[in-house]
Length: 447
Image (cartoon, rainbow, N blue to C red; front, side):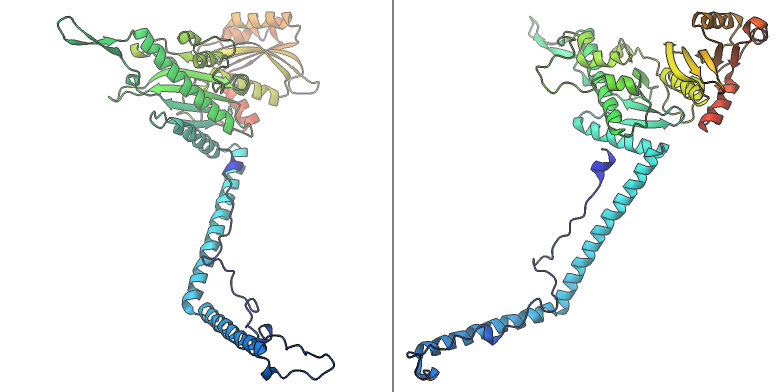
């Protein structure tokens, strides 16, 4: 589904009669000289020539040549009349116009495709989303009898695609193992164990999720995406609130490390994970958990998971970001500010701890310890003291405490004291200002 494979090529079709267009001199009038028989040879080279009227062979050849020439001349005149007829001219003109229209349509399509490729390379959301959804729709055609539509939203702020995958209904997995005959002759259904049914459904969910991730990763040939978030939703026909049964938050490196498609060789072992013994050892589920996916423990018990991010939000606030998105945003902001040699030491659902170094003369010179978190709760004095201790342990010069919330008055006063002046604070308003300054994009205010 990449752009190169979608280019069209125009190949001209010949006129239906197979003949090229008539041009002057292309079909000359038959000449008698080309048909006349050779003069009869003399019996005696030194004697007078033999009169042609007395040579019977020559006369028979002459008559045959005249008939052949006249037939060729009649056919030539017929062709000329047909070529010059209004019907023939109209037919050829219609053919030429159709060919010109075909060539123009191919050219206009390729021009529009090049425009889409330019917009995609500039990370315009509509172009990125269009490319992703074409790839996702193409992947879905592999299971026409099991529809699983997937929608994509691209967030330029974090260069992340958020995918919403509609999962098949729960009754797609058989609930019975068969039937048995009771002693009284009654036919009784034999239900499947709930654990087996849940395991089969989760295997199916894992395969559909990996297929969507693979489609999004494979089509992004110019590496516009920094990561992909996928949420698998169970939508009940009764209109109940959708339930998230699987959520994946993977950056580009994680997708590159994980083989998303199953092995093509049926005898190949799935990365040393063994055979399909149960749900925990199923290959698709193992690969999904390698991506730190959250998976429902009991889909039939309606046990959902928290989605890593919401696809409905194009301009997100900090709480709308996934863990990978928040880490990507913090790194992008600080590296744009001059903090290089970025190294993440700890990372969790709500924040990260990292180190970085800025060159002399930059806005962030020296070695830094960065503690970034998102949340509504205020950051107090104890966390400032913890960061100061980490700065000493890392032999750094400064520390940066970044939060999408706010700081308490005690924390603000503490950084004004001599022992903590090397600790710098950035609150939610500051994060939004940095986003606008360094990325030229907006981060919405918190909910």
